Each structure stands twice: as structure tokens, then as C-alpha cells.
Length: 255
Ligand SMILES: [Zn+2]
Figure (cartoon, rainbow, N blue to C red):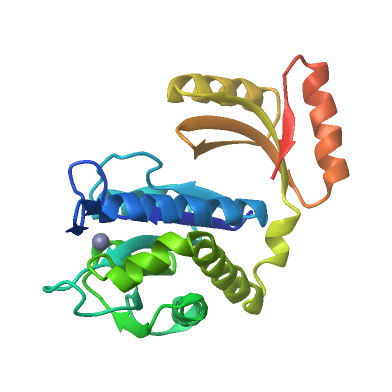
């Protein structure tokens, strides 16, 4: 199975999160989350988002999405806030408890963001946060600087790409250290179709199963994608694709 990383942009829609001088946490969170997700996709990981647009879902719904799609790692993106403007600066990464893979990841995220210029305000245990508590996979929540700190906003805006890369690198390095990355890199599937309508995807999956194929439906980018097979060897994926094409399916090979 491909290693699946759930990217959760905090807040959204009717919930702006923290705000400062017209700046809204939900927008910063979405922009940073999408940038990190793109880098992780390029690195060969399977990435799913809890939202890609300005919509609201509750923390419980976010955790449910992550659990239902079989996420292996959950990374939530937020910005911090304090009572007074410019009272604090820096990044914090929150975990359910400070142990295991999530703890290593949180330390690497803080370290890499400190290298970009943020103060490292350490790992914080938050056992009552729903997205950390209800997710069945290791989960971290990144507070990417204080939204009411001019200093942090300057780093966020001027070093945005470096920040995204720093977080992606922290994730990739942590998984590498745990021996996880290698198994994700060569994972080929044949995509047969993508639908906006779940029922159409289910219908095609049923047809393919009747024809003897191993089928999965992936919810990605607002689409239900019907994929067949899962191979570490590209040649095997190509052979399967040829069979599907002979049967009239319009396919492509993906990771
Ligand atoms: Zn938040």
C-alpha cells in the first residue's frame, strides 16, 4: 500500500480561525498546506486533503475523513495567536503525546522551521484536540508562527516556499528514518476513470470487479478515481494497462 499522508488545512469557510488586520488563519493554513501537499506528491507520496477550498468541516469530520481514507499520517496546518499583538513569535508543533513517530516529526518540523527563521517554541502535548485525539494514525498540528506577530508574518510571506519545503523535508526525513519512504516510491496503479459522482465510480468499480480486477476508489481533489492494481514493478502495471486498454478502457499509470 502506498503511504498516505493526510493534509489538513485548519479552519475554513465560516470559521476564519485567528485574524489580524484582515489576515485570516484559514487562508494562510490553506496556502501552506497545499504547497506542502504538492511537494509530498512530487516526492512520491499519496496525499489527501481534508479541504482544498474555503469550506468548513468540523475537527471531528476532519478526523473521520482521515480515518475513512486510511491515512497513515495526519498533518494539520494552523497559525497561532496571542492576546496582544507582537506578544510572542515562533512555531509550535502540537501532538497528542510526545512519543513515537509523531514526536520525531514534530521535532524535525520545529528544527527545520527554525532554520527558516522562526523561533522554536517547542513541542506541545494537547491530548484533548479532536484532530489529534480522534485520528487513528500519527498526527501533528503545526502552528506556523503567530498571525498577530509582524515578525512571523514577514517570514511567512517572504520565505513561504522555504517554509513549505522545510515542512515537507521534515516529513520525508522523519519517514526515511523510520524506513517508510522506500516502500512508497515504487507504487504504480492504473487509473481507469475519475468521476465527480460517487455512484458512477461505484458502478464502474463493480463492473471491473466482475471482470476479475482488483479495484479501489480514491477520493482525491474532489473526484472519485477508479484505480486497478498496485505494483512495485512498473512493467506489471504496464501489462495490466494493456489488458484494460484492449477491453476499451481509457487508462493511465499513476503512483
Ligand atoms: Zn487554528
